[in-house]
Image (cartoon, rainbow, N blue to C red; front, side):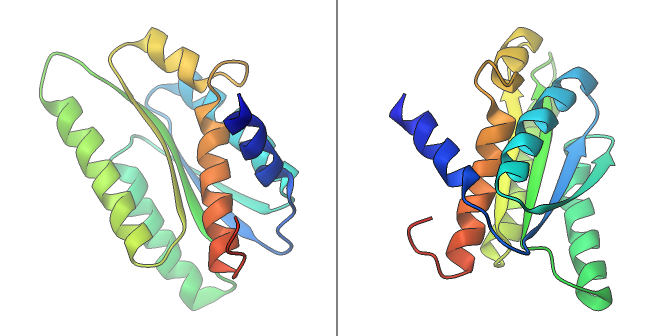
Length: 162
């Protein structure tokens, strides 16, 4: 319980002038909508500017992030962080493992390169599990991922106790 209130307090601390790129995979639309609702609420509490981009699935998220980060670096003000939102539900083939692993690897590579990243891509066995994790009145994993990227942005800005 203390973890949730601590995350919420962190998300409410304003980060003046911060820009967060939110990339949302739409393959599971209802889940994506819930994840984005939770994330948007946390980001708005922190008073950051949100740029919201939609892509078909989780594998496209790291690619879209790389393309958009490269384009904005040449054209204008930098994004302070990237928030990935989506859902991968285990089926009967190995496709789940590929999508879940490769999307996470791509996001980790971005993070290690110095871009604050919040990974809100759910990897679950069933749609029912995804719904519980996505709902704002459930586990609110979209909000948690937003809090994670906000914490990393604060660290990048020199606030060591993010």
